[in-house]
Length: 180
Length: 75
Image 1 (cartoon, one colour):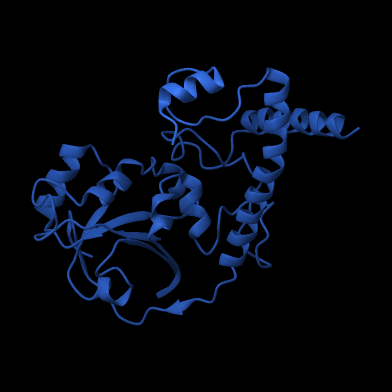
Image 2 (image 1 turned 30 degrees about the vertical axis):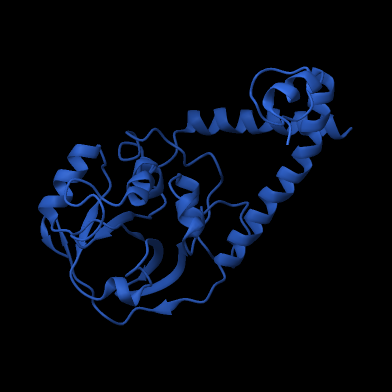
């Protein structure tokens, strides 16, 4: 799970109509989360503003990501009390671990499916990645789906596997020809 | 510092009013791109290696139970 601390609360420039400009720019580049979710990873935004303000802001700005209200010392404990940042966590049964933290200019690059997966403890979970032994990994491309089709199609459609295999083979042939 | 008008005369280029890089043929442009591509690929692989190191970062136990308000109440 990735938690982005966004500044939306009394005292922040723009309140109560808007969240902080930088955080809002970042929120505008958050991808559709179906692909991240397909790798058993979630992204959530967290601010101090009450839910009713967050709901209004999301509707106004067209944002769809889950967005929670912080109630305790989460921000001070994870380095996001004064400045925005992305914290990555992993859950193992009922235990939770903090695995990574990205802020400042690192935040600017966040928003794509790959930027989120790359900051998690398990990565993209694809076979080509150099990960510790036993990490969950499946072949690249095969798990990709249309964002509205992940639920309907739990395992890769054999036809898509065929198409993506053919695509990879063509690409490999071109690479071999270029080397020869 | 040359005015933009003087620069236009010097380089025979358009009216962007700044010091732009050389204008070249498609072949020379492609050669320049191929040179950059070597660096782009090295940059991409360095990113992959950094992500691999991230996956080997130690984990920090989160001992406190944090509470958030969501659309459906406390979580």
